[in-house]
Length: 135
Image (cartoon, rainbow, N blue to C red):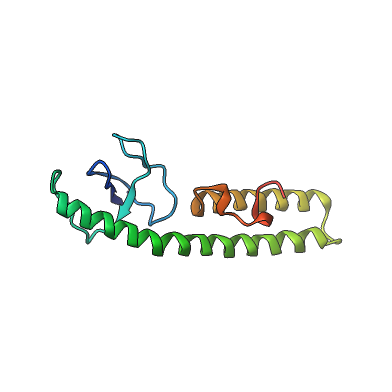
C-alpha cells in the first residue's frame, strides 16, 4: 500500500489526503480553485477552516519550504539529467555495439530522461537548454 500525505491549498484553506510524492512533482490540485497543492510533512498541524492566523502561519511555512525544496529538487533533476546525457554520449560514441542494441539503449535513456523531467520539473522553463526533450 502506498503512503498517504496531506496536501494543502493555503488560498482556499483546504487540506486533502493523497498518495505521498515526497516533495516531487505531483498531480494534486485544489478541488476548489484548481491551483497546485503543497505536500505537508506529517508533523505539521493543519488549522481549522476559518482560523485565519493559523492558515497565515501555515502559508508562510509552505512558502519557506518551497524556497528550500523546489531548488533542491531542480538541482537533483539537473544532476540526474547530466548523468543520463553522459551515458547517452558514451553510447553514441561506442562503435563496437550493434546498431539495434544501441538504438534500444538510446530509447531507454530517452524514457529515463522523460521520467526525471516529470518528477523534478513543473515548468519547461526550469530546464537547461541542453536538457530539453528531443535533443
